[in-house]
Image 1 (cartoon, rainbow, N blue to C red):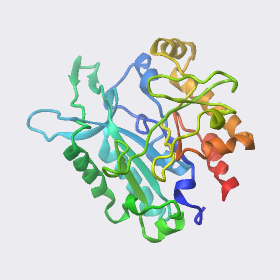
Image 2: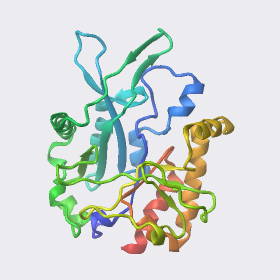
Image 3: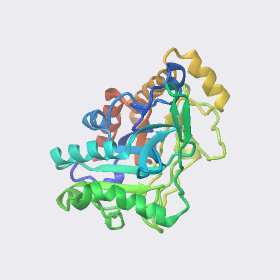
Length: 304
């Protein structure tokens, strides 16, 4: 894919990429509702994931210690240094690979410790504060230094090879922003067990991925970026319906995710559906698995 235009590719991605581990012990009844990955960042990279959805908060153990960035999906997971460190180590070995990082705030983080009975309300990040966004970007970029891609210079005709030769192999968005004027949008794609269902539109104006999706709801292009989807879920449901299904599946969210990933593979197995898939920059999965990652990668070859 070295000679493909970078923004024309669909990258395999993971949703809440860091939830393979949690800071504190969580009972199974809670864990099945918030864990979205079983593989470490390194394992995801080795399978082919190249887009990472990273939710953050800041946490201070006590007043004598420095406030640090933590990954979080309602409960604290792992310090961000662990996530970035795994990516950095991978890129040092795989010197031609390119990775996209999407950093954003987790809105309701907690430091839940059932052994001690302590529950801290962790500080959310002020995503409206431009200075804070800049600080977070600087913090992340300090890990990768000379391998940071200058997104404003990546045009619709920039090839993967061009980025490799310039050693611009890490692209970072903070709350979907590369700069004030360059913004990507996040629109989840909802998969349905049958493709003729009526499109569901909610407050986020989500798209139902179905056979006539392109015809009924073309993706709006922002600058030269396409729409970046964040989460592929089994159905468009409210929280009560999701909770009911989580209990229906013996392994909770993982059961729903594996059903969703199977639908992705089936959908991509029909070559006529590839056109709609190519309208997004990444497909991000819960419980990313080898088969689904490979099916996303293979969908790109039709257009090379």
